Amino acid sequence: MEGSLLCADKEITELYNQYVDMIYQISFMYLKNKADAEDAVQTTFIKLLNYKKPFQNDEHIKAWLIRTATNHCKNHLKHWWRTNAELDTMYDYGKEDTKDETLEALLKLPGKYKTVIYLYYYMGYSTEEIAQILKQKHTTVRSLLSRGRKRLKDSLGGEFL
Picture 1 (spheres, rainbow, N blue to C red):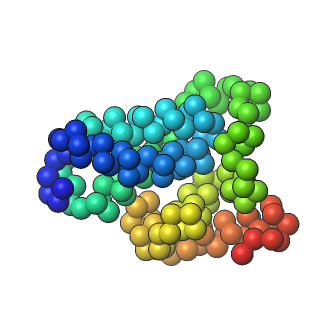
Picture 2: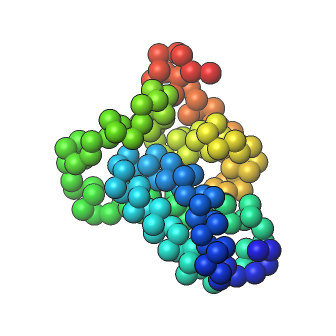
């Protein structure tokens, strides 16, 4: 896969099977809705199918998928009809898709915090890797992680970390 375009159906299927759960979790973290998260996963992999530039390695593909899914979710949240909708009645958030109290608290954090916390704790990325994926400075990622942990700890009543 190094330096080559993705063209084989087998490669796409392998990438889908390898990364679908991660992309779904990231999408759900932003959109808080199973149907929208599934749509975001589908859109992300369609963008992968249409992507014409070569990837350097598997980590490049993984970072590209995370960034593409994150950007799609952010754009979806900014859409005009979504900002005018009654979000509380529109979404049955958290009842079906997640039972983890920490994850539910994480989902309520602002996007800039939940992304770095999710990538750090749930996906196992280092702060340097997160900085590369999100195209931010390493110190910014560490600050967001620290502030996000504090907010998460406060929302859980001091029971986190």
